Amino acid sequence: KFYAIAAPFDSFSNEGKDLIVQYQVKYEKNLVCGGGYLKIGPKLPNLTVFGETSPYNIMFGPDQCNSEKRTQLIFNHKGKNHVKKSELPFKQEGDGMSHIYRLTLVQNSTVRVEVDEELLFQ
Image (cartoon, rainbow, N blue to C red; front, top):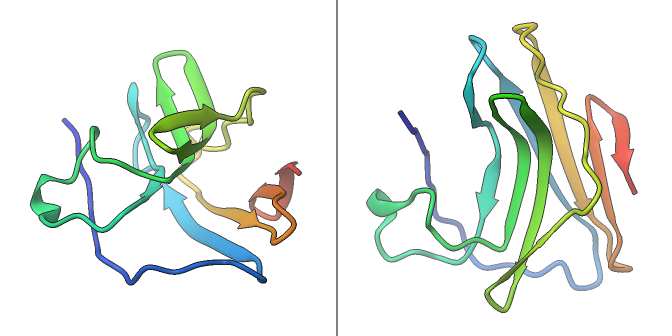
């Protein structure tokens, strides 16, 4: 079973400044297959149809299916997905604890990924 929450927001640009995306995730029970990631994308005319195939610009956060576990970082540019090539560690191991995920898009075109203030990628 899949669940999704969608909300509209105004278009924005991080030109000349850093953009920080931060949110908290807590798995209430161990998952076999699922994710707690965010998709940030273009405005959709009908949010009731938001789901797995909805377009996005950034996908970020924990994802797992059976033994495959990772922190996803995917950018979509001109219809093509650019996946972070090296694996980012999975930090949601069934401990029932909340974790804070932070993605920083720095104005110099670099990226920083942190979970619970631990730097995973820069």
